[in-house]
Image 1 (cartoon, rainbow, N blue to C red):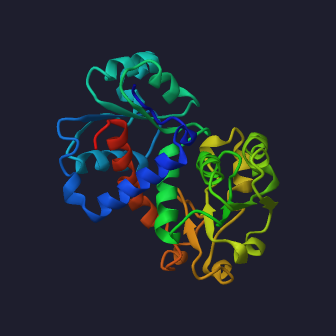
Image 2: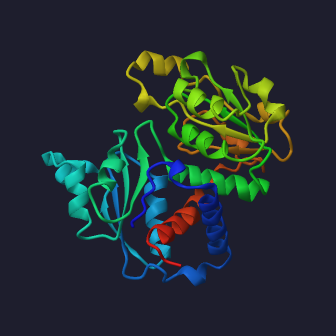
Length: 305
């Protein structure tokens, strides 16, 4: 039976831990994986812009010895003629062994997965889910902190539309003793369904605050997000909120020495470039980790040992 990755909760904690272990082994022994996907093809179907996610998938497949086909602009495909996601997926399975799909509409990768016979990876669907970013975040946290248990995780910025935050909370809430500090303006608070269906339902400790400076000393992880122009219907609301939280070296002064700053990127101005030189800034190491965890995931979904 084929396996897809549409939501991070499709994976058990044992499966996540196994993927992390595989990624760690790839990092340590890259040559051992150089031909694992020989003669296999990944189709990247990207209906909205992406730099890190698309290139990370492509780089992952190439480093496994495989090939990549697909599109990075839907206007250059039959989508521009009105072809449905289901028909595109059924067509692409004739040419590829696995699909990575990014789509602005929530649920589109799921529709693709139930209409084709090859594994489908959700590479981001609207404001809903971004499970491979979450796997990237988890690998980074594990490599930087050594474990997940007992961490205090601060999520800062756009918690309403930030699909990476929703997925990270879903995943991290399954580990013992994890606590969340949710830092946002009132208009960008975490959605009610995340609060009730994940945090409250599981009895996860969390607080909602407005001040990044007040929260800083207690954090083990600070997960920064940008205020996303593309998720707003009202330009005036975006302009009013886009600079709500900007991380600077001065604000980091009260942070723990072992605290780490993560960001799914791209950043606009929510992290000052002056922070980049701080050893606690892990966001570019996070990008690098994305390639390795996607290599591990491709191997898993293709059933390659």
